Length: 461
Image (cartoon, rainbow, N blue to C red; front, side):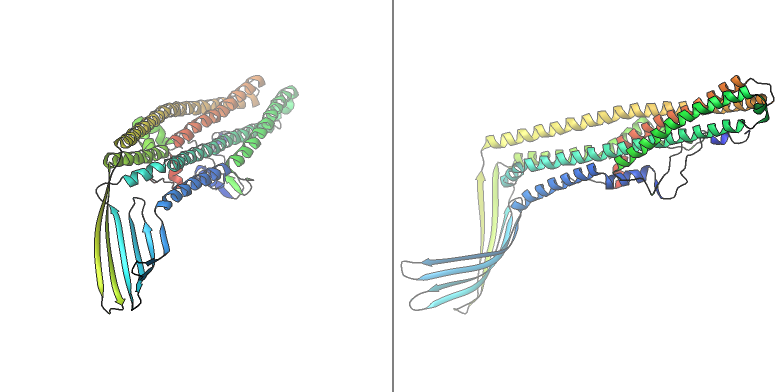
């Protein structure tokens, strides 16, 4: 009895069962892969991406087969015909390139003339293109849908994983409390075989009452732990936790190294800087701003639609036996309504200001939340260290009272009071530890840790 009580104090709870380890990093990855809500948001995002690409592909198609034919009858009764087969590639900015093989013939009463040729044509914007601006404006709906799906996906991933980690931290702390209660119950039960207790039945009855009280608490905590396992399983998107081994994070009380130490020791400015740099929502909003800035630039330059064309034809065989070629260039210029461009420019400027305000709001939100969570984490860490010192002191006091009681020098009421004080302090350590881990969970949430561990990146499109 006198040897092993303090070994219970703040030890690391480790399941003896074999299986795949469940620690914070594993929970992040498993939840991301298995949770149906994340899967639904992922499919919604992919649908929006495909819809966006569908719109662009309609203006940037590759046509692998184009057959063109014509017949013409002149007043001189000559009949001419032209047949071409070729390919064409169009681009979103209005550029296009085409390549054709063809045959051209002319029939008259006296003769038949024909030639086979190869022709190519290239069109491209020169200096400015209103065509690209108009197409970008037309795809605004698809663009907004895509960015909305991205932000929705980011939110779903963050909150679902946060929920799973919340259940995990609750589970390991409550499991430890349950283990501690069972350990203290076993310590009291071992007292019943001591000679002094056997010789004083009334005192043994008091100890049994305390054991019964502990047994009732244990049953309540068993229900809590069982419920937390079900909730963790649900939040992770698993049908069962069978085959998994829950590996808790160490509180590391009385030690230099402990879980979440970097958040406690780093400055507010450093944590905030890292959180803003890693925030995926801000990255998505910056891609929205980049698109708005592109529209603004095109609106400023898009009063003219200037397209150049370059073409050529090479006749490699014909009835005249000679080879011939021709070359052409062209320039098409349009001037657009200034009021339309002004509205496009004003809209783009307001879109930019809107996104800047949203980014600033997000930065302020992150900074405020980090100051709150980091401040609470620091205070709870100090509280834990204080509780740890109190726990060691109460454990020494209980040892002294236990030794005195077994010698008949201490009343059983004083022993039970010291026992309860020790037990309550021990349980309080894990309650405060649970609150501390909740702060670390929220700091991970704010600093975008999940996305880094998952290797998730969002481009500008």
